[in-house]
Each structure stands twice: as C-alpha cells, then as structure tokens.
Image 1 (cartoon, rainbow, N blue to C red):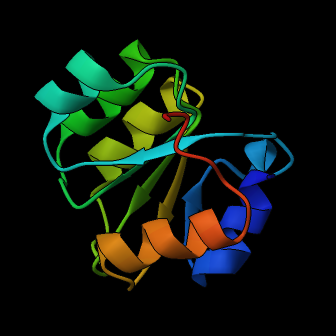
Image 2: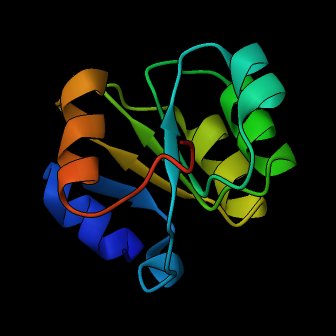
Length: 115
C-alpha cells in the first residue's frame, strides 16, 4: 500500500511528506503508548496514534517508520511536523478513531505484521 492510498482510505489530511506519497508500506501498528511501540513493534512502517507530542516522532524515527497517522482529528503543532520532516516521516491526520482507522487500513490490505 502506498502512503497516498493510506491518506485516501482514511480521508486523511497530509500535513507533511508530500515527497513520500509514493512510498510503499506493508505493515502498521496502532498505539498511544510509545513504550509498547518500542517494546513490541518490529518492521512496521506506519504508526497510528492519538499521542500528540515530540516523543511520537522520536519513537517513529527510532523504529524506522515512514508515516505517522494522528487519529481523532488531532493536528500536531509545527514543531512536531518539522521534526517529522527532518526524519523523513509523512504525517497524516484523520477524524477517525484509532479502532476505525486500523480497521479501514486492514480492510484495504495493510497488515499488522503479527500472527
């Protein structure tokens, strides 16, 4: 799935990463707890979260993720968007709740990467 397809599937707004729209991703995870992302996530390219702070981008960068989707209509500040740009991470915002966003992406073919 391409990042632009994630944007379209979620009716999301692209906040940064225009140059990343054609990047292909195969897996995603949804969490508001960055400690869980660090402990349990392996090889996921997309982070779906409602946690709106710098730690989200730092965690995504540490885990080599290429896209962060903020749910529940949350829109990050310019500091978070700039940090994402510096780390080559696309940032999307959708009005969907996390459960719905994960379901829509799974239905569209994005995998969780777990058994």
